[in-house]
Image (cartoon, rainbow, N blue to C red):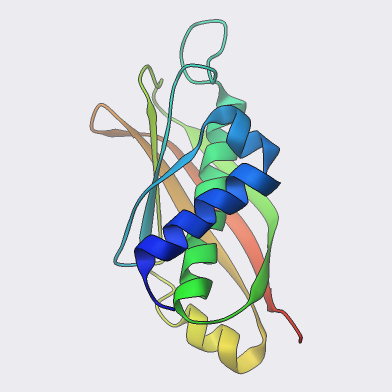
Length: 151
């Protein structure tokens, strides 16, 4: 099934049922279009002692957003695969004082699902950004290993 809305709903269910941190932080699937996923997370419950977004929450949200993008891309391609977050790095440049909006895209990996289908596995680096007041507040780069499930 290649219905994006159906797969977005399924992703939200996976996060809510199998990723306690996503549920606790309130990460929600937002928009998924043109190989890009946007997530929305309330600031409330994800703050530090200064009342701004907690760095650990930003890392987790951005890593989950990239993982979720891969989940959706795999589902839209009609494949069944496991996704492993192998490594990640984050840079902070602005404080986040409002709800957290994270965006991840497959811009430089347009043939990733074809490669996965052909080779049974891929490894790629994805970037996720949190935008605050029109500027990039943090940029996460994560390394993900994906392997087709054997049946």
